[in-house]
Length: 180
Image 1 (cartoon, one colour):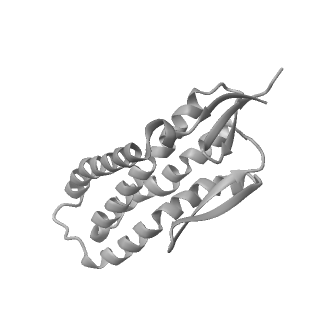
Image 2 (spheres, rainbow, N blue to C red):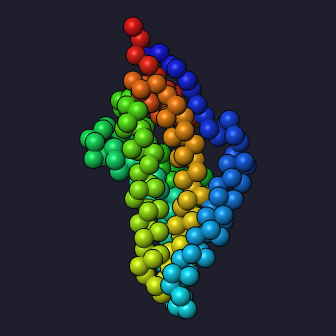
Image 3 (cartoon, rainbow, N blue to C red):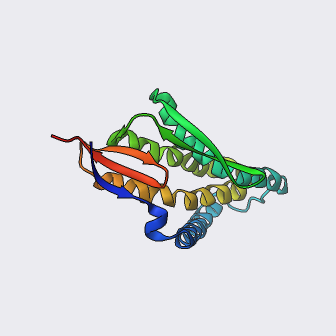
């Protein structure tokens, strides 16, 4: 295998810029989605009982997002190693490394999984649950901000050659091509 491209999104863009871009996209998505959904619901009042589940959901959101990235790998029966790390003492996060290289299609599925499994159902739930649509929409828009990093990853994977393999490494990922 030859390395076609090595990518570290945090190093390319910078941690501060990533946080800023994610925050701006999360806020803009809320601003753009709240008005149409509130017009859809009409004069419905938002139930105050939804604040505690929202806070619990927001605390669990980064871990839930990481799990949604890993879930397709379980269904594809890929061998993975999960590392639990903690930048904050009380809040564990986890990262994964595959034992084998992923094809371009598999990498695209892994990258789109949180959007397909959290964001789209969240948008649908904000239309369905009239009393809690504001809280569900806040949760979904924060997740849209988090998925910005996934879409930056997917942008590189989409540009990769058709027969490329993706390897998740410690500080980013490598796009590999089979040698002749």
